[in-house]
Length: 512
Image (cartoon, rainbow, N blue to C red; front, side, top):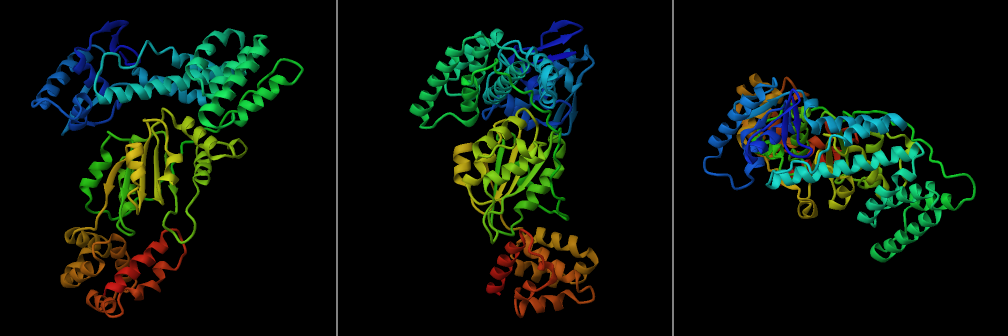
């Protein structure tokens, strides 16, 4: 059985096209197929199919659609499994043309020359028109736009591969249309110029460079980038026909950069649900220092790690530390290195690094966790351009520019309530110790104000004094306040994040 979504939605069983039903039913199939072999919650399916205004009996209608689809799928050996509150399309991912297309593109990025060109030709041949033709609604539109971008990336990558192999004249007509449709795109311009030069039309190639240069100056106030100017100089150089060195194969790396998940982790159920929402690809987790933002993000990421088979990237942006925050350019260099880009292949300027990063992760299911961001300007260059990626940003600030300009989901984090704070202390100190002194535990909770970091500090202090009663430790803290912990061995290292602990301790100490 084949699932076709890169054009009109259709099923193919033993070479025969099968009708998957009316538009809404097709949308249910598509909504399951993009996450093939993974559970998709009922609420998420309803959101994808009907948007924010579902019919009153959406659940019953969804059950009917799933039942009908099962009958159609049975002929090809696939099915839709039901779990509590969720459904999953059980099928070979490579039977779904979207996933087959992405797999071929991914393989091509690790190759060069004829191998890369062949894989990209296979990928682009899977398309039969506009993706998800006939499906309407916000989710279908967003998916369609993302797939359109991925198709364009594949077609342009194929052109580069063919140019690397020496093609030129046979590409001119198609590249003329592309250049006209993207008049300010320097990559399109360079491809067209090289094809024209290879076809013996050097004058036309130089004229197109002048045209693009004038447009860039007039419309954007900038000159062409280094790559286009270099191509222009090489075309002007007398001698043999311009040749392009084949690109070296990039190291194939799947980054697994998440730090260890915090333990124990308590509460935060509603916030985890917010992070699970798929209506946005960027989540901005905001709250005071020590409130548990990073712990929340890491716990969620480890619980959902199967959603990101193409890698998980973690960047500490150092936005609230004692030194300077990490520059976006430096952050991108680290990310590109994690993705396998050789050091001498990393561009020198911020914009070029951002473009390369977006190109490498396009169409891949990658998680990018940006921890401790200072402001929106630090984050924006690190955002992927692909809706297949998920970004979680933590910050002490709300980052309104990220919310307004990039449709990020705002997830505010508040202090733990007393019940969850008690559970956290019990998880760290053990039920026997906390159960023997509930009043002291309650006083610890009060002194720490629901801040997980403060609770962790006092728990760590208690663990270094296993023979002391909790009441005695409470008395120590209540006396000189939490200032005493500033000098504890728990904070003897100057690691990033330790200074946030100082601030937190001092704030609570001043209040005691």
